[in-house]
Image (cartoon, rainbow, N blue to C red; front, side, top):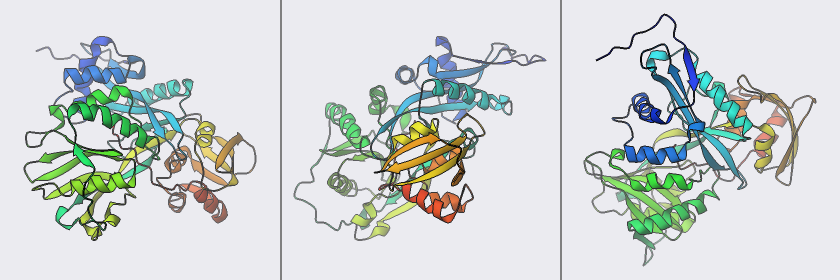
Length: 410
């Protein structure tokens, strides 16, 4: 076996990947994210339909034999529904990894600087990501914006307040029924849910394939429950008779009740686990809310506002008013003073030299953008600088009727 020979100097070259680099990229991803093995070939083919070489950057160690890739990052076009129902085309940052052998050399910043340049040139109003670690991305302007609850439900205690209907309106779906129904109902749900990710057509083959590497030898294939206005996908862990809800989408309250009634009535199941919105009504539909135990709270989606004017004018607001917002940015070019005026829930933004009412960092503004974190919370944490009156108005403006929920990991 040839051992790489280090050189006295170690130039690290930021490049776009070549076609034959992808097996190495997949191996780096598996190593960085502690996966048992890289994505299989059929998954790699589908994955590359989602991210082109132009949206991927690698860092190559040109001073080491073989010129190995030592860092990689890429982004997908990820559509997100913002408050009010508009859909923003975001740059969904993913697969960010730097080899343990090349840390503390500024490679992450170099890659994100290049991505940021491209995102700005392509007029993305927002960037998004799902973070494996919580302390990395704030310095690049990202803030945690969408949260979830991981819950465990005791079926024996999950008695609904409303009587069960004669017909549950829920049926198990065949493969062809699932392929037709699930993408359509998901698109319908995502269009109306604050923070929801609309899954592009190129994502569905991988999602529906349910390949073996997504489970272990003791868990079943996915079972799909179909409802006219929703669906649920779950698998069974045979070791402890747990039903693991992998995906549940409900476009109406009735579909939510009907699907959860079936999920909590599965034969021989001791518990049901799921990831749900932080404001999910399930506990309140039961006579014993303690049947739904919150096991954890996670930041599901991070947001970075790339274009302050475009992003703030895209969403709707909970109250009218006018504020001058001073935004700082230690990474990009978003710093400035912006006059936000809201009339009839619609906002307009203009640069201004007027004295600011509110001062905050771009990551803080990104965190409150979807309403997943309250303005008052960040003000109490000294992340927002404003007097009581301006804080109250900003909080009311950014109030949302439902907590954001993305529903898709990427």
